Length: 182
Length: 188
Image (cartoon, rainbow over all chains, first blue to last red; front, side):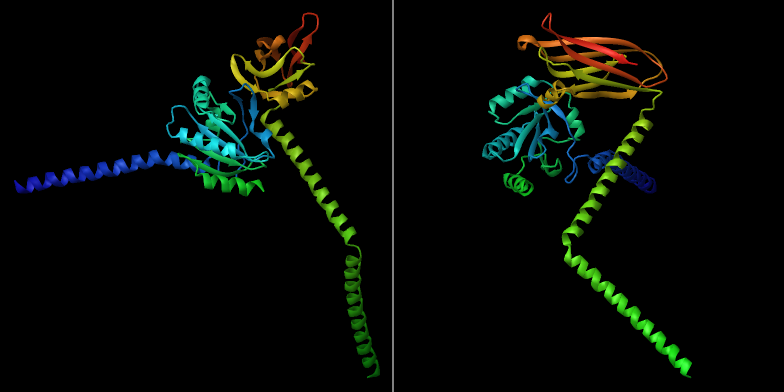
């Protein structure tokens, strides 16, 4: 009888081990695409920032490549993203601090509805252009999987800094912009 | 013995003459370089320019090759956009559908619209289509007369044959009615 219990316990343990290994394999398989995507993301420091044209809230169509010659700070956000508001406020302060030859700040809202983006932009009194990526085409182009997402693009259109999933530290942002602005 | 001595002396003289020639050549070359650095710089500049030209030619050839491979003439369809004057219409965007499938959606910046008004022609779409009948629909969005929002569509049904097919979208001003005109036509 005791032998039978022992056998049953061993079988249960083997089953638990098998399930644990299977769970680890599934978790690995699920994690792999994320790792693969980040390694093949078109937006990495040192790579050219993919070009795009989007409509701004003021009705103008703005193209990133038309800012060649300027340092550009791009901030991707969405109205439903709570962590984006501090990032937008920080970008607003940063934009206000830029002089005539300073960096250009552009916000890109991934909201499907421009009215939501406008509401947030107005409530925060954003001083820089807000572009609306209603189809999320640019979001896909930049392979964005966490918001807010901030990029510094140099005068030649090359990505020189990126910060995702949080507010870009102002000191880091200022240092990067100053570094590429020379 | 004497002959052997003469041969050795001659060999030594030849060796010395050779050494002197080499040394002289090196000195002359050095002096020539030192005397005219501007000429040397010009030569390097010329080399760099030649290299750049070769690169541009190579890039153009590669581009043509890529286009020929990706869009062979037998299936190629290209759609161009041109604007005549554009007084009555400020272009904002063009959406292009072929056989009810959106193939291009282009937003024009102020600079691009200005370039088109100055006579620029844009290759809006380049793709492949099977031989046969196809329908192209272009939707133009912008500001019409008196800064009013303006949306107009233009349609063309065309026959894709063996050769490449070129389609032109043209926006022009109709002076009589003071309205913009949107024309889609195919080039033969």
